View (tube, rainbow, N blue to C red):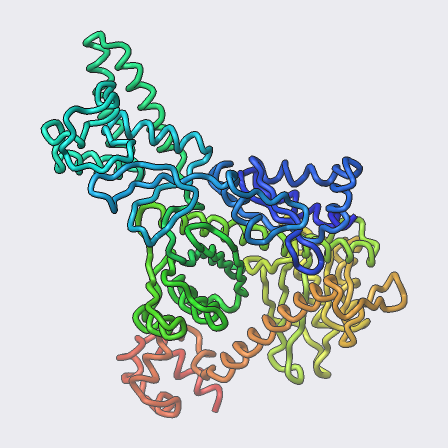
Length: 604
C-alpha cells in the first residue's frame, strides 16, 4: 500500500492535538481528520486494512500527508470543520446546518442590547459577535451566565422605560428591568452591556476575581443557594478562560497570518489564510539554507514579495516580526490589491495567539524537514555499506586530498563527514615534509600524510573512521593502504574516487560505478569537493607566506616583531645590510645586531 511509504514521516509526528490531511498523487485532499495525538491517530491507519471497503479505498489512494498542530482538541475540531467545507474531501462527511458551531451576538445596534445565539456572522449589522463556541452548550451557558451576572434582557420588547412594572425575569434576578425607567436607567444598562462585552472578549481574570469575592461573601452570610450559583458561574468563567479559541474568531475581516522559523538548515514559512473569521487554507513555503543571509526581518520582507507576486493580498497581514521598509512594502501590496493593506505585528490577544500558532507549525515543519535530510543521509550511508561490503555503517568518513604546483609548497588536507554532515572541528591540514628530489610525487605525499595521521590517531586511541576516502586513482589508494599497514591499521577500509566518479576498491578489483544521482555517490562527491577546497585554500596560504618571506627570517633571534622594526627603521633589506653595528644595536640590541652582521657576512 502507498501509505507504507509514509511510515518514517508518521513516526516523526508530534504527540499533540491537531488536524491531519491525507492527499492523493494528484495533490488533492481526500480526507481530513482531527486527533488528540497526531502520531497515535495517524499511525493507526497503518494497520487499518480490511476494516471496511471505505477504509480500504482510502488507504489505496493515500500518497501524501500534511499535519497542522493546534493547542487543543476543540481547536482541531473547529479547524477540521473549516477544512472539510473548504476542500470537500471525497472520504469526509460534510456537516451542514446545525453542525456549525454557534456565535453569541450582542445587539449593540439596539438602544438596549440583547444577547442572542447566532449561526453566522453578519458584519454589516453593526452588532458585536463572539465565538464560535465549542461545544455549543458552552455558548448557551455563557449567555445564561451573562443574564445572571449582569441582568441583560432576553425579551424582544420595544424598550422605552414606560412599562408599569417589570416582568418575572426581574423578580428572579435575571434582568435589571430597563423597561422600567425608575428601576434601571439607560446609563446603568450600558454598564451591564460593557461588562458583558468584557466577558465575551475573554477578560475573564477580572471577572473571576469578582465572582470569587461575591461567592465568599454569600457563603459567609449563609446564602448557600446564591453561593452555589456563583460557584457554578465561576466554573463557567474558568472554563472559558481555558478554552482560548485561536483558530476561529468572530472577526470577519480577511487576513493572512504568517509564522516563520529560520535556522542553520534554511527556513520554513507557514501562512494561515483567514477568510470570514476562519482558517480555510494553510500554505507552507521553504527556504534553502544558502538563501537565508539576513535576519528574520529580511527574510520576511523577501517572503512577502514572492508570496504576493501572484496572489491578491487580503486587507490585513499579521506578521511575527516587523519588515524593513514597511511603508514601501505596504504601499506595494496596496497597489496590487487596489485597496489599503495593513501590515501588523500583533502583541496580544487572539491575533498574537494565532501568529504564535503559525510559528509553532513552522517550527514543527522545520524539524520534520531537518529530520528528512538526516534520513536521506543515512539512506546514502546504508547504500555505501551494501555496495562496499562494509562491516558497519560508514558513519565517520575521513577524506584526504593533496594540493601542489609542480612540487612546490605541497600540502594535504583531511576533512571529516560524520552522519552525512561535514564536521569542521575535526578538519586537519598537513605540510608535506619529505618529498623526493626528482620532483613532485603525489603517491609519496599521500603515503606520508596517511601515515602521520593514523600514527597520531593510534597513539591518541581514536576515534577511527569507518571509511577512508582518497581523492585520486589506484596509485594514491595503494599508497594509503601501504601507510595504514605500516602503522598496524591495515584493517581500515580505504576507497578512491576517480575523475570518472567511480569508486576504486582494491579488494574488489574492478571499479564500482554508481548512478549519477545516487545519494551515496553525491555524498562522496560532496566530501571529496570539500577536501579539495580545504587543500587548495591551505596551499594558497602557504604560497602567500612563502612570497612574503624575508631573508631576515633566517637570522637567529629575529622574529616577526624585530623584522618589522628593522625594516621600519632602515626602509629596506639592502639598507639593513649596509647599517653599522651601532645603528643596528639601537633598534634590536647588541646580541641580535651581531647575529644580523654575521648572517650577512656569511651570505656575501
